[in-house]
Image (cartoon, rainbow, N blue to C red):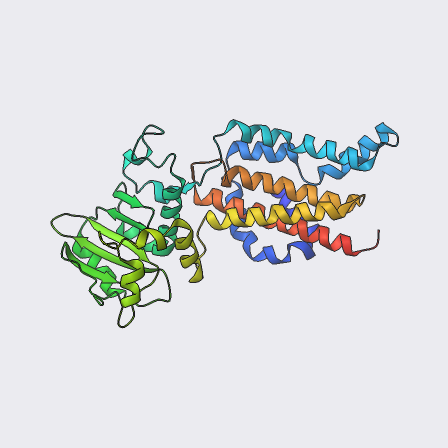
Length: 344
């Protein structure tokens, strides 16, 4: 997005964008690093182009129905973005680069072969959940690049550390303890995160191997720990974990702690914003000033969607850009709601 267009928005729509100002400084720094194709698409679509073209089309059409003209122009404005999206693979759950670079290379081997993530959206989702729960600092400092060897849909993964004892020492310094039999017979050591109401981390050094298992327990043990053994245990004779720990329940558990999961959170906001603009479109009728806000908001959603739904891997900068577009779409929706409250 050209910086002069963002400046125009900030100066002329202060009431709608007030809640975005605190984020604008950081996000503007990302604008210059956008994907060239994304920049070209936005320049082609432009800002507030809808209303101007509608007026020109009306003057040419000499009395054409405003709603018909509006629909035609909206399709024209978005058609190129939609065509570009159609050329991409089916919508997926993108991974952040900081996650992908820590996977063993074979995770992204030939599409469709066993043990790959290419066509396994649940495992991609689990990786995003684990990343959010572990935290960016621990993820980057304790999990080396190309070290993750195993991921399960029950919220666990194995990785090869530089040194198992260094990881153990770091976790101990953060307050992790060996309470509630954190170490099993096939472990060198086991540590649990200090008790949480949900989604606690349990880390174990695997005996005889330079490998660590880390997983999320949705029901962290408290005295006497029976509920934890029932709901989180993975035994050959009592495999309740496969029923209680799914991508959906794991996401819910992490979010209960107030943790936003990157990409999954933005995808959720994108869906909510789409529904909000669709609802407003049904109320706009012939109010061109309302429809102009809706059309502009949809343009931003298209740009955000191009990042959030069609890529396999995205950078943190791209995610920040998508978040920026979502904020602008929300501001447009607020503008449409404000205009609806005013008399025509």
